[in-house]
Amino acid sequence: MAKKKRDNKGFIFSTNPDFEFNYEEESVESLPPQQQKLRVMIDRKKRKGKEVTLVTGFEGNDDDLKDLGKFLKSKCGVGGTVKDGEILIQGNHRDKIVELLLKAGYSQTKKAGG
Image 1: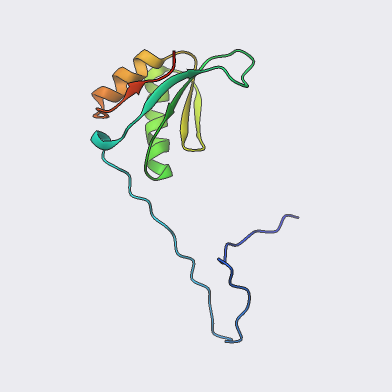
Image 2 (image 1 turned 45 degrees about the horizontal axis):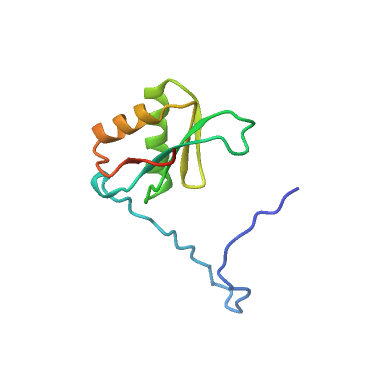
């Protein structure tokens, strides 16, 4: 059975019987779409030659990033994932994704790579 890890930020023990450690959730505010500097590129590394379209540079919380990933996947009609602050879309859809992001208000979107 796996143990759940708790991030107590160095706190180990208290002699106060009524003490409860308060977990502070850091809420990251997403920048508005006009201020996002997104880069859209094609990547083949560690994918056995298969292409994926990679969207990087999103600044904000994970929920907004997942929503943007879901929007792009549905508009392109393909699968993909959101992990490590990046959106991976299966296949070469760089031009279409740049168009979609510009129409959605992400005015600082650029193609990156070859």
